[in-house]
Length: 121
Image 1: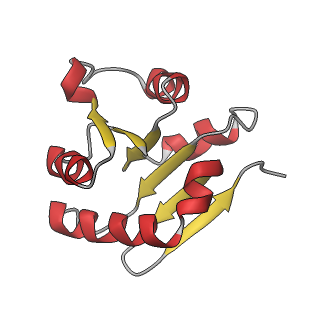
Image 2: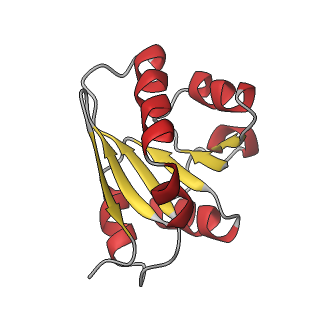
């Protein structure tokens, strides 16, 4: 899978994804630290990447995207340490692979994750 990590996501999460064989990119890798959310969304869409973010704005951007076939994974965690984020992301990847591939908003919480598949009706 191809991922694009927003600035709130640790580079350690990106490194872990790469170790697992994924094509993972952090905004910092390309000097795009100040890229606005709309542009991040466009970049991810054009490069067919899954957005990893802590920013709730991406849910709204996704809802207004005319059901563009992509996935946004939004972390809503109190514990934002890399090891915990990796643990939760690993669980999402194990449980929701089909939804990730076909387009969804996935909200990751401490003990569960919610999947809303595309298209939104």
